[in-house]
Length: 338
View 1: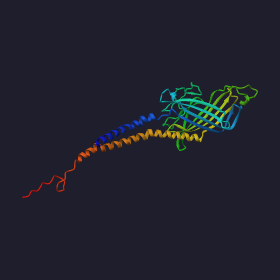
View 2: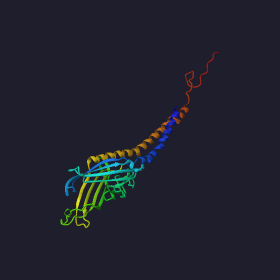
View 3: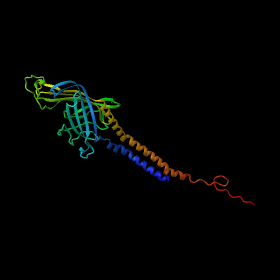
View 4: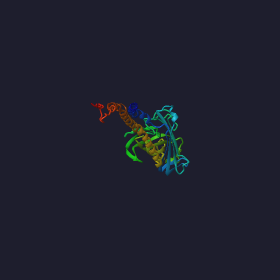
């Protein structure tokens, strides 16, 4: 009975030893991907911000602005291509003194490779509904489980072009060691305003007629990224938006704010990063190592219980018969009288 059991254990052990490198170098790389069905709400807040109130037609200062960004994965948008993830993002900005009246509503859709996080052109990717925008570089995520201390081209949705995210050091965020990246978006013309503004609002002679203006945007974006997962767990967006006349004689600031991730959103992002890192570590280390150790154990036990155990039993043989005089060996000859 021991021999068949031992052979089964040896076979299982050999199977586990073969499976371990397969799990590490193939299965793990198939599992370590960005999710298709991501759902995340992140809030950023800026105090002492300035913006132009279009309803009252006057600037406001000292305001507290709140930006709420919601990311939703569209599972069916990739046309069945499991290697591509499609995420929609919408952002509403409000003055918390009047939260029912959004100051700005924007949105975009990105499609990206689930393993590398690089943006791809497909699946209706757009910025505020404009599908002609050619996205490149990275969008909402850094490389999955492979963030390096180097610069990355990150696509800026406002200026609609990639701008380098430059590595600037390490920093701990709620117990997670992060890489800090800084993106400086230079002042860029982002388009013409659809309405003419009064000359007095632009600091010009009020007797002049209403002026045509162009909008310009600039920003400094800092991200604290978990290198284990590529997830930014904290953001800071120092944004500036102005309008100017084409000849540059008049202009004004329409938004100036320093938005920072709120504590509750930061905690949620850290929890998401830790959960993702746990799954990646299990796929890349714990499961293959456990499979290898189990394989070695089964192989050793199988050899002991099977072929080696059988040889040891055969070598020892059956016990010798006991002699009539109490000693082991051949039976003693019977004595005869006379």
